[in-house]
Image (tube, rainbow, N blue to C red):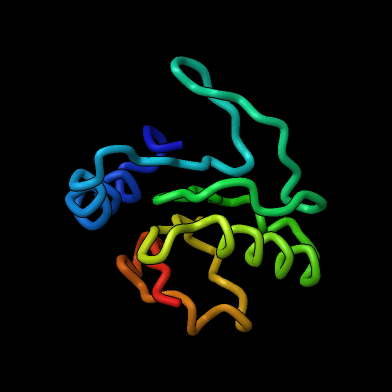
Length: 119
């Protein structure tokens, strides 16, 4: 995901990581994608399951764009509830937060669709 999109990686490196490096532990949820290495896997369904943790960063790139409007709203509600206050959300370039959640986020990087939870 990051290797194939250097602009997004640059946005994370410049806008998100300087803030997050001040935390003793950073919890990241990479929704809609699996990876290997030192990762704890948990079964979770964006459509049917509820919030399950507090994350400083949620990456949900190019996932919700395939959802219907009601499923997209549900997924964004779940993501909002799972992000800590002032946590970051990374979406795909063609995605935005739902209209009902617009006031809950500030744009940290407009081009790379990186949002910061403010409410």
